Length: 167
Image (cartoon, rainbow, N blue to C red; front, side, top):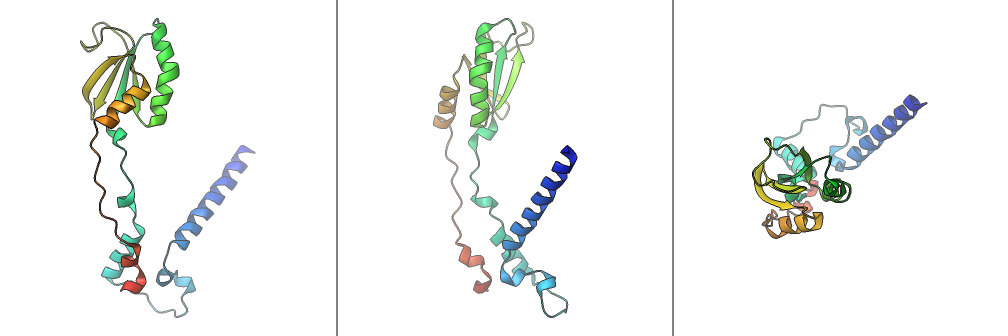
């Protein structure tokens, strides 16, 4: 029963993807089957580039600055504050989009900045920025927002520039 359900779901998903892709095409890009003359179709290079740029909207997506940050939580199984932090704050950090690593406290295998538990370390591209004891998720997120420069957006290019009628 489970396999049958997965097969039906996969079929529906693929059909939806094909319909979505086909509806995104301009009328000039219709499939060969809908073309009345059966001659060979030749697409000029500049038309192909123009159509690719029209369909490519990856430049419009804003990059999340939290992707470069990693949160390390130094904790121990015997620490009641650590258990509370992992139960309350770690899920919030994950919902905000941070990568969270839980590290076990061992005397010989810890940074010198970790003296009390739970210590939260904020790393930017693998390099430690700040260590705080029981750093609340809201305060950590506020720190990141306050210290992150906004990424300038590229200029918006109107869609009519890449439309088939513009050529």
